[in-house]
Image (cartoon, rainbow, N blue to C red; front, top):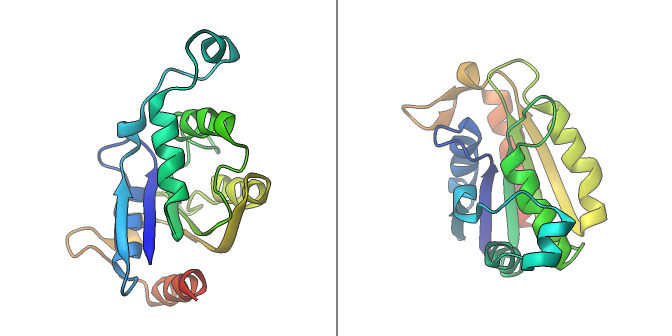
Length: 175
């Protein structure tokens, strides 16, 4: 099984990156590729840019990565209750190639934040809109109060209930 994973953030210190790496490390017998959104940085999408310059090569590369995956794991960072600008811009460009951005690939959607909300707003948005973009969402999970529930030194969840929920979500993704 080939799993494509990324944090929907361009922060080098992203807690969502830590979460997505931890989650994918729990998937047995899988080849995991972790993407860095910084490798897909493009001008801010506009129809004028698209008409003048076409779709950037980075958008096609991202689309091809999604198409080559058997499963996808995304952990969403939340900026002002919504997607990060980095993720939204990549998504906007890729959707111009094909509105079926996720190409019917099974997905696990995660989110975390330092606060008790656990980036639930952006996760809800992602879960609700994903089917319109050909995502097969198998499970989703928010991890609230990241620094209380995750040990960065040991790279592990320390909350047993959340660990059980993550293991259940991973089983739904891989079965």
